[in-house]
Figure: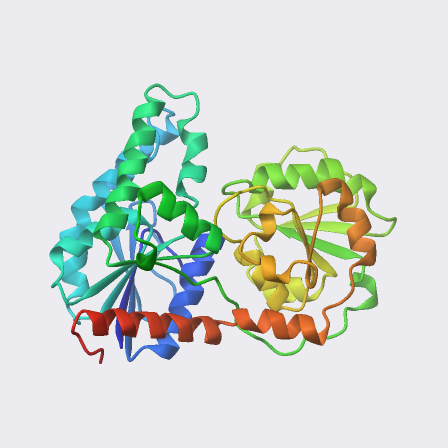
Length: 378
C-alpha cells in the first residue's frame, strides 16, 4: 500500500500532542506501507531546514502565514489563514502525485480540498482530532465579528467532511459528536485511537525519585489553566517530600506565576522517555472535552499509572479503574497515595494501544476503502 500523509503544520520534532500524533503515526506507516511520504505545510516563520526523521518527510511553505501577523496584532483570529490554505490544494496535489498513492491521509479539514485535484480512485481519508473548535474559541472570544468567524470555522470543517472519502477520529464520543454536528452517515466515520511505541520493560524507580509526579503541557488548549490548577490546588496538598514536575512548552507561560518549592518547571524535554521513567505517576487535570490525550497513552506505555480528571481520560475509558484512576483535583493527592504500580493485567490492557495494533487497524481500513473504489492497493 502506498500512502501520503498531509500535515497542516511542521511536525518534527514534535512539541505538542497533535504533532506527536501525526509524527508517531507517520513513523508507524513507514513500517507498514510499501511506500510512505509525509508532506507538511509550514509557514514562513519556519525558517530552519527540516530535521532528520525516521520516515520520508518534506515541507512546503505557505505564504498565507503573513495573515498570522494580524492575529499577533489582535486584529483577526486565525480563521482567514485556515481558509486560504485551500489555495494550496493544487500545489499539494501535484506533490502528492509525483509518486501516485493509494491513500492520501489528511490531518485536519483545512487541506481536504486536495481531493478536487486527485484522481477519483485515490482515497482521501480525513483524520480528525475534533479539538479545532475548542482551541480556536479563545481566539474568537470578545472579538468583533466572532459569530461570523464561528460560522466560517464550521463551514471549513463541514466542507472537509463532505469532500473526504472517509473520516477517522480518536474516540467513540468524537465519532458521535462529528456525526451529529455534520449529519454524517455513520459508516463514513471510524474510530482509531492514538497509540504508543513499546519500549523495554520499565525498571524500578530510583529511591530518590519515588515521590516525583509529572504533568506535561504543550501550551495549547487547556494546558496553561491545567498547570495553574495543579500549582494552586494539588501541590499544597501533596505529602511532604513529594515534588511535582511540570514539563513542556507550557512552562514558558508560567513565568512569574508564584509556585511553592515542591513544584519544578523543567521546560521542554526532548528525552521524554527518560523523564517518564523517573516519575511515579502522570497527573492529567485537563478539562478539554474533545479528542484524546497522547500524553496519557504515552505515560501508560512507559509504565506510569495515570491520575486524571474524567475529561482527561477521554478515549481511554476502558482503562479507568485500572492503570488510570479518575477523580477531582482535590482527590488527586489521596489517589496518588494509593495508586499501585501497573499490574500484568494493566499492561495487557494497555497493549491494545501499541502502534503495531493501531497500525494493523489502519491498514485494514485503508485496504477496504481501496477495494470498494475498485482499486487494488500496491
